[in-house]
Length: 81
Length: 81
Image 1 (cartoon, rainbow over the protein chains, first blue to last red):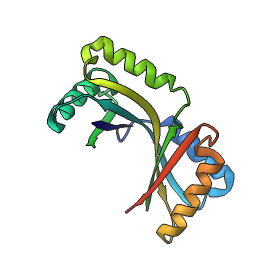
Image 2 (image 1 turned 180 degrees about the vertical axis):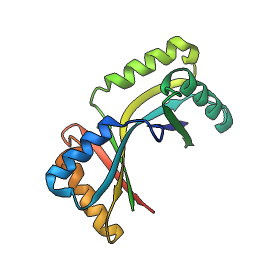
Image 3 (image 1 turned 90 degrees about the horizontal axis):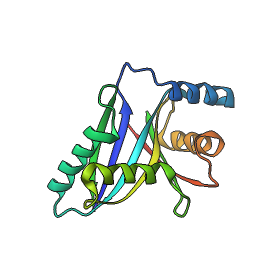
Image 4 (image 1 turned 135 degrees about the vertical axis):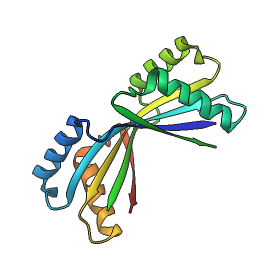
């Protein structure tokens, strides 16, 4: 079983990596096209779990303990396969 | 229009961030559950584009020029909204 965890900065938290990428895209000629850029992490975890419910619970636990800084980041978990 | 770009290291390229996270999860008590961890980037771009086809073409161009290092990374583009 596989979990896809997307971790992104909360709205309102300065995303300096996104800002820098936006600026770089502007200078590369995408100024007219790009309105905003935000950058997060995608964590893909291969799991030994008996059910999707167990997998979701385990991965939520991992996010709270390690994968996300819940003060400034939001996370979304998708269990596949 | 919004583009979601997932950039991940190619299979066979050492993912040290993923390895370190895997080790940390092991020490936190998830040793039985976690088989493998890989970490990539998720880039969310707000676009001014007239069509999904244009948006996809522009974002592919951005990936080739800046967002991904195509020597060691693969990217996937999804256009939404």
